[in-house]
Length: 79
Image 1 (spheres, rainbow, N blue to C red):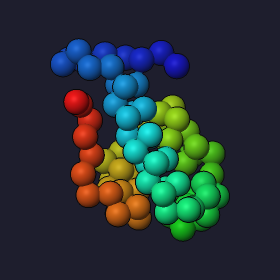
Image 2: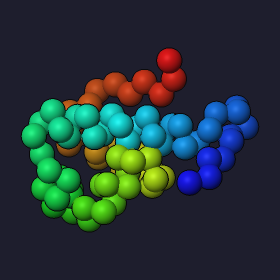
Image 3: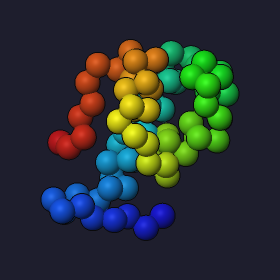
Image 4: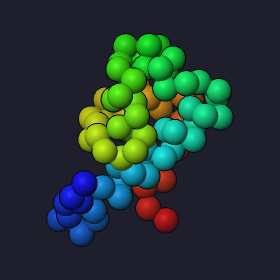
């Protein structure tokens, strides 16, 4: 995967990876498999996998759907 830099100098891959890790951790804490999570959301399991690995860019709408389904209230993109 070739990370691209935004105008602010932030690697887009870093943001995708951080979001993916948060989705993965939240899903695991709830004891939901990727397949079950995908079925609940009307998505495909490989898409969930790629999101969690930071390999798939998602829209803000998709991010909101994922966060609502996992009851994620806060996302910290930078530390």
